[in-house]
Length: 351
Ligand SMILES: NC(=O)c1ccc[n+]([C@@H]2O[C@H](COP(=O)([O-])OP(=O)(O)OC[C@H]3O[C@@H](n4cnc5c(N)ncnc54)[C@H](OP(=O)(O)O)[C@@H]3O)[C@@H](O)[C@H]2O)c1
Image 1 (cartoon, protein in one colour):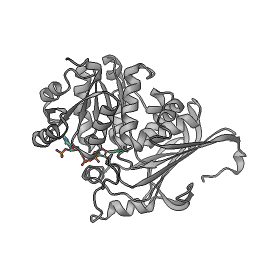
Image 2: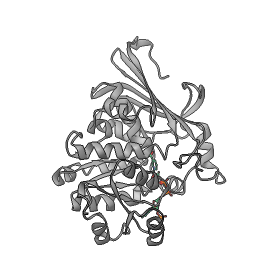
Image 3: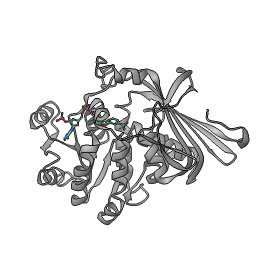
């Protein structure tokens, strides 16, 4: 039996930690993954363990990438540092005229991918960078909280993790990324000062009040791609950053049969637009594992025709954000919206 190409989905970096969650999520939803990557040995081990079709292609071999993506409807790119890998994989996706989604956390990689909008439109495909825990999740929450508005006075994103056992890919991505991080103040893109500002953020239970540092990742590029923000700040608590800095912190360990670790997260988003304010709170387990349903839900919506057009898009621009988050709520994340309330703008300061 031949599988219709719209169900065949290439996963680049398939034998990585995130790639494996993505393969499982694709299969759970009835897609046929094609596992791609540069290491033939690891791919063949994966094939032997799972029965998934594998194709070997290094990022510096365009012909091999073309062969790897032939007959697929999209590539889900999970191999970072994306500063090195995004462009060649995206080039191949555009040549093949297939959709491209990645999980980049690096701001510069996402900026460079958004810059390919005209090429994506010409190819008639959707290009969706940072469709992951960092990037897409907060962007969907901001978009939902703004109820479709395309501007905001303040966007405040705060992430609490009870720890962070990083993968090799996370460590390499951090080492590779020497670009200064940006956020938005008074309508201008600014570089995070050194030392970065700290503040106490009052997270919902079980975290409570925690010291946080200004640490914008890809969300601080994805949100302003489609929402004009006068202020956009993105914070993280200090415990996971201490874990990341410590070379002795181990890689994530599975705590259940799905492979998820016991790591807990909360993403706490507050937006204000004029006199209206709204807060959205998402909670869940394992920032790597939760990236898979975010990515594959996006893929499914693109293939179903539920994305708003072609081109290089942010998650909240491509999809009905409330509907998207609602589809993941309860099973994958907990989600709460605090109703918009009139705000005394004069007395409003960052939380
Ligand atoms: N935005 C988010 O929330 C989010 C969530 C999850 C992951 N990520 C990002 O995803 C990336 C992977 O993370 P991970 O946790 O899955 O790491 P991982 O388990 O170490 O896997 C990394 C994968 O990328 C491949 N790779 C790395 N450099 C490559 C290159 N130049 N050419 C081809 N393949 C290459 C690796 O293959 P080899 O073993 O052959 O090197 C491996 O398959 C990181 O950049 C991470 O920041 C972001």
